[in-house]
Length: 127
Image 1 (cartoon, rainbow, N blue to C red):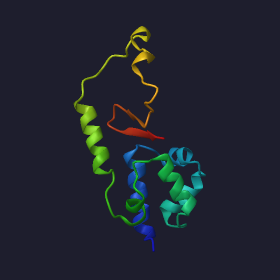
Image 2: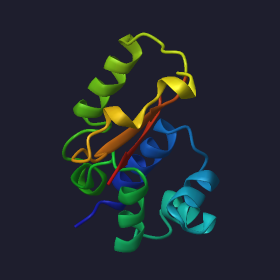
Image 3: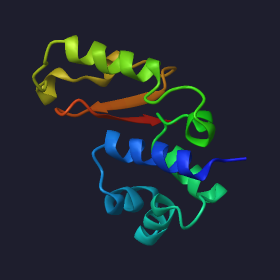
């Protein structure tokens, strides 16, 4: 069974980690602002639909950590990616002429895109 008080703390940690307000977080996961408010205040318990929306909008959040605190957030694998990125050199945007599709093989498919922001946060898009 889910501990509602602990779930609320973990949800607040996710919201804070991404620098979101409750309102912007609600918009990103596609729920009403009152839903976030009621869950954070302990008035309502999160529905399965709510949890699935959080997981699909923020794939770095692990289900078991969100539901029962087992594991960690952000996960070690994601922290490592952020560290590697911050150590990398900044690359200027290449000119359009320099970017060529001839380097991309027909067999290669994009698996994941990660966008890193200057405040150290990031967003992970997986297919």
